[in-house]
Length: 119
Image (cartoon, rainbow, N blue to C red; front, side, top):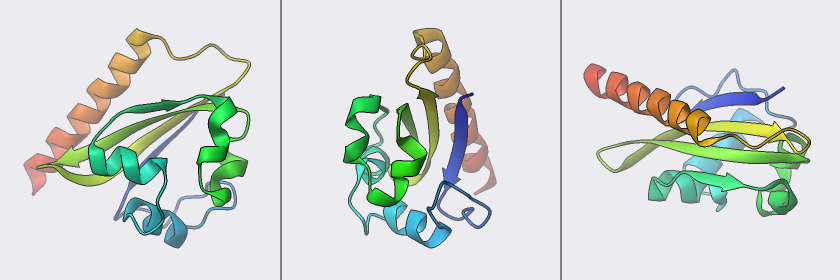
């Protein structure tokens, strides 16, 4: 089964990601712990990390990403990183196809528009 986690910098209290705790995730998203998460959020760049590159994540995330292809879709508003959408697929499952990726991007864009409308 694919895990989908929506991480918003201000909505981390209920997150249970492996052994990761909300304070650690908040440090990562805030850029205090350099990682692919901070790169994706700070650059506003979608990323796909193959399962064989899982060691590029912070140690605390290895239980979450081990044996999985990871997709990161940052949420940005006015060039400010708000959080990201995290998806993963087990290594024995097919990669997300372009149609699925377009749907995630559409969902992300709708979420950003909703956030923009309430500010």
